[in-house]
Length: 58
Image 1 (cartoon, rainbow, N blue to C red):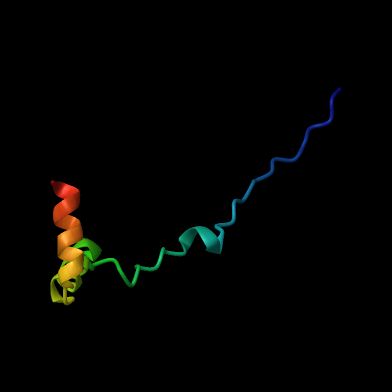
Image 2: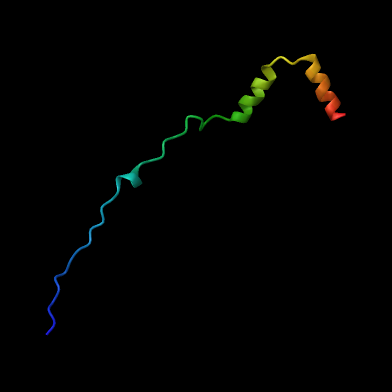
């Protein structure tokens, strides 16, 4: 006759790493494209730079 095995329970412990939430980015709510446009508008333009850009588009 075969010996009976004892019943057993397998426990799964929850890892603390999986519960860690990803921190919000400090730049999350900032539209960098808009900021770049605003900075570009505020910068003084040289007359030489304007002539170069006009020649390039012609």
